[in-house]
Image 1 (cartoon, chains in turn red, brown):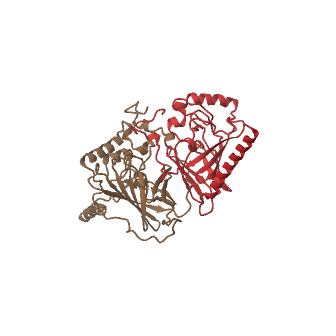
Image 2 (cartoon, chains in turn blue, brown):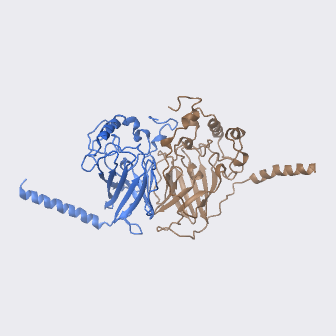
Length: 253
Length: 286
């Protein structure tokens, strides 16, 4: 590529980016009566993070994917790398997805199922198709309850930083993993989620993961959430533990 | 004196029967205009937390029908006064109008519950499976949250959201079956009228095996008057019942602040079901 062509290409790309920005600006973000961004609606990811949050090639039943870990690497402590390998080998029986248990946060967000956000001034509820999970994010300024509490989905307290919803989540158990590939955390997990509109139909979802027992430093995941824009979208049911023959327990129990 | 005692005894015997006699007459006050506040999209604003207006086992959890089964009393230690009062099923005899085969199956379900040898003998709730609909709406207090085009019933007991669509969307295809069904509603004054369908057959009405088929069609009336929520649910299922019938319960709106809803994780810790049936079928729990 010549230098001139490179400059022209760079100009075209920046012009395109500006056009996208203008389009987004032309379409006002939905807002609630109290002026907050209105996240209400049905959302879903379009990625393969549920299988493996890191870059991975395909395996039987697993689509290939570029990961959602910012920087590409999860900064495990040395012992945790071994544990992660062990988790991979027992994933078909010991992972929450095999047992049909609540999958924790942020994993519930990037399970390949839709979820509905129900937004009220003091609480934002997220109702997920996957195992019928329901999260309450308290936005009334209340603190986390004292603990430690071993919850599958943690305790979520949210606040608005400008137009970004910031959710602080603690009080996890050590039974959930980040994906079906064995990436994991301890009960010291501290999650900070950031939900920010890119435009009316897309959210930027950024998650900071902190866990001094397992990682050498905090690290991030980032991915878009897509609004289900079809007419009258629904969140249906995926109660896998009540499947086909509800009279049998699923494998792994 | 002796004669008088006999008379009193006779009266005591007669009086409960008279009290228990009932009809199809509704216990819910007639629908009225809504005079309270409204949501931004114009719905009656009924948001808040609603609690059961009954005590313990007097509600619909165990048995929707009235009855004092001696076997059950022996097995559970329940006393006659623990049984549901007769106003839940709004038929003259307080019984659900089952077709003969269905009455026989219901009796078998109940018998099996007290002599469970297979997991299917236990109700879904006992196994930490979803309670399903309409059972959860009959038996559990709810927090109501409203949004434009929606009424959400959030049930803390199972951490479940039931979504009522007010946006006039078309019904789901009949082949789609859900534990909590598909609910489409509209407001008439102070009454939310909901059509429910697409309910699977895995959830019973109660613990002791009152049941319906996947053909079930529901009409619900949630009547909001004062601090009361009157709930009338009519079940129409030509495969199981001889005619539609209505169940009625009442809820009370909590006036003050309520506890934060915290996590409910039942199935994740479920260890009981296989032990309940284990003595007769050691490998059934797998």
